[in-house]
Image (cartoon, rainbow, N blue to C red):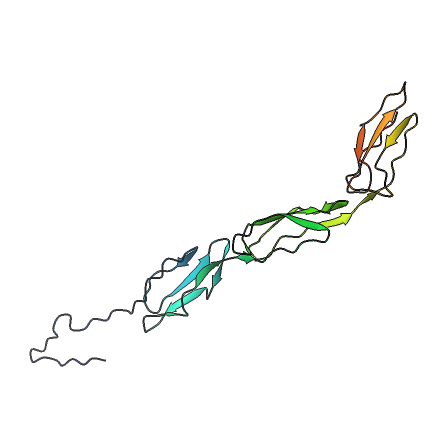
Length: 200
């Protein structure tokens, strides 16, 4: 508080008293984000938001105080990070390149493949989301097919083993005087049946 005495002239000197608002430090730039503001003067409030792939580490708004400081402290936009993905049962990780040490950033991907005799149900590729988790993992299931039947007037060959599994193949042929109606080679599908059943 300052005091002024009226001079003998009875006139206040020009510019004797001028009040200016407190101004807080410039805060108009937020790396990987945006700041909404009008001015940085007391008692204004500014608000913050982050770009996609980043989260606000701190409060979403700050107020310029009488002391000319922001309260609370200004936030930062930190990258969204996903931990290493879980690996589904009976699967292996075919492609995974973490871009944040051992972790992954938003939109990073991982690709799985199933072990032999197992079929994949779901997407083989998962993605790091804005919530810091991965999209749904696929499932790998063991798939068996019945032994294919020998066509009338023909023959069928398949692997000599107790059980036929996903992606196992069988080949067909016909005796002299007959022609094959359908593909020569068929495959055990993920649904547990054969891709076709040729005849002669």
